[in-house]
Length: 319
Image (cartoon, rainbow, N blue to C red; front, side, top):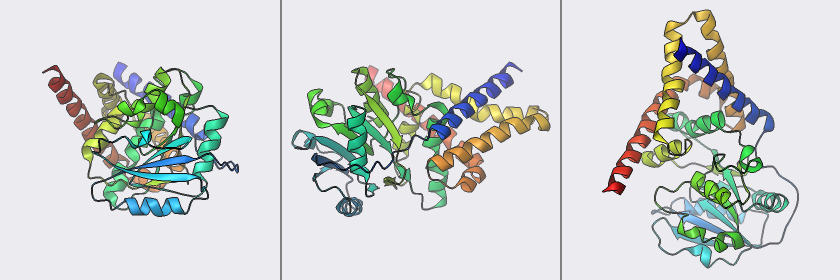
C-alpha cells in the first residue's frame, strides 16, 4: 500500500506541475518590437549538410536583416563564436528551421529581462509513427517535472532545462566567461549550459518554441535521445530509476491491484496531462493519448540506455 500511495502522490504532483505549465503558457511570444543589434547565427551542421540548406532558406525569410551566418561542423575544433562580430550569438542545429519574428522576439526578451542566455525548445515535427512515439518523450518528462517559468524566476541551478538546438546568448557574456570551452563538448546538453549560466549567478530563461522554431532531428541518434532524457534528471542514475519505478511500473501495479473505480483517478490524470502537454508543444492530442503505452515502453528502454551509457562513461573515467 505504501508504494501505491507513493505512486498516486507522485502522479498528483506531476499533474500539478503540468497544470502550472499549461496555465503559465511558457512559450516564446511575438512582441512586435524591431531592433538593429547585429546577431551572429552559428549553425552546427551535420556531416552530410543535407539539413543546412533548409535552415539557410528559413534564415533568408527572416524579417531581421542585421545578421551574419557562420556554419560549423560537429567535429570542428574551430570555435566560430570567437570570430563572430554580433552583439548576440544564436546557435542553431542544422535540423531546425526558423520563422519570421524569431530574432526580434529573442532580442526583446533578452533585453527586457537582462538574460545571459535564452534557450528555446523547438516544436518537433514528426513525419512517421516511430517519430510520433519518440519525439514527445522528452517534453513529457520535462513538463511533468519542471515548472518552466522557474528557470528564470529562481536562481537555483536545479531549475534548469534546455536544448542545444536553439540557444541565444549575449555575446559579450558568452565570450567573457569562455563558455566555448564547455559548449559543444561530447555529451554536453542544453540543460548543462543553462545550469552553468545559473551557477555563475547570471540570468537564464527557457521557453517553448511556439511557431518560431521547428525541428525534425530524426531518430537515428538514439544515444543522443537517451542522453537528453537522462539530462532531465540531472544525469542522476538513482533519480532516473526512481522515476521509472513510479511513472511506469507504478501505474501498472495500481491498475492490476486496485479497484477499477479507483483506478479512474490515475487514468484521468494521465489523460489530462497528455492533452495539456500536447497543446503546449503543438503535438496531436489524440496521437499522444493513443500511443501513450508505446511511448512509456520506449521511455523505459531509452532511459535504461541512457543510464547504461552513463555508467559506462563513469567506469571509463575512473580507469
